[in-house]
Length: 45
Image (cartoon, rainbow, N blue to C red; front, side, top):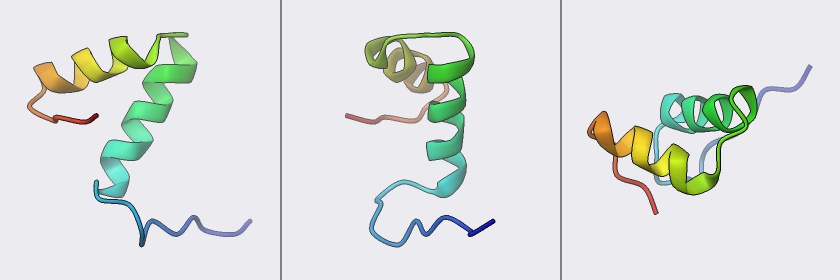
């Protein structure tokens, strides 16, 4: 399996993985994921 390259992203890979996991695991909207991350001090747009 190839590793994923995060070179062009402005957020750390851990934040991206957490957002994707939340989005698919709990079938949340992107707005819900944004709100959850904001509660944890991670601001995305």
